[in-house]
Image (cartoon, rainbow, N blue to C red):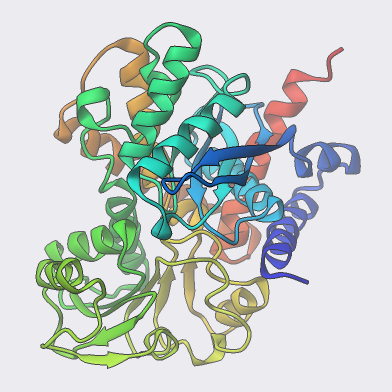
Length: 416
């Protein structure tokens, strides 16, 4: 069984556990577990050397009972339909747990963006947008950036879609450049949301944030922003990593200087004021808060019993397997699950969509104030559910989300 197939099975098991706890009927469970639409497209793309290369693209739309589909587009050589399906389902639950009016979707292209030029990426993005243009739209499905895509990618999607529809349509995507209707605070939103729930978790654990030891696995956009905001809150960032390895300093790292080093050298490793460590070693460091901000399946039953953090705050999607989650719960480690912890991004995407539809512009203060309120309320909803049902925070978040989506599906009924 491949890692992506395993990932899908993990997501399904989380749903089934919540559905069973809530007493949802088998009929309704069948509706909720199946994507409403799964699309695979073939994308012939001319490369810079004249070669015509064929890529495979995906878009999975899981559920639209609570609103238009919402979900990112990722570019990665190992992407599969199973992975996209799992991520689309997670997006449904993420939007529901945050109580924003979106359903879940996800998309992607199986490619290696690190080995492609900017011109090749633009051609491939426009090909993909053309191929899925009939199933996306401001009131149907609103893509966003994800792994190895960014604001520029969204600008290409928006421009291509607008030309297909023969009208400017900024609300078709979120995560756009500010100059094209993007929202203030969007780039930092996931990291800010992670920092907010980490702060709320510290209150619950009665561990002051002042000088709290933070370990961040993954120093991309979400990992860096999480570290930066937490450092502003008084935390000590003792270790960070990227795909090449990690660095550790007991005294703490200066986040901005580590970022400058990574930009200059291509990695955080070999930072002069820290010692190099492996990603495996980083996960097992003694700390207060561990923030996995890389890819899925990083904390497993192989290493869960060696995790020394008081709490794990999941900035990445699916970094903890169900077996590991059970081990952590039994040893008293609080895990703030991905569908809550990293929901700052989709929440500010929702704010961007609202701004685009209403042709208004929010200030950074408005964005941050509204994000703060959403994250705190959702954290409290999940913690209340955990206490009510006597379950882990992950199970509680799923219970909150599945209940909201199930109620919407039942209220809509079946047509025709």
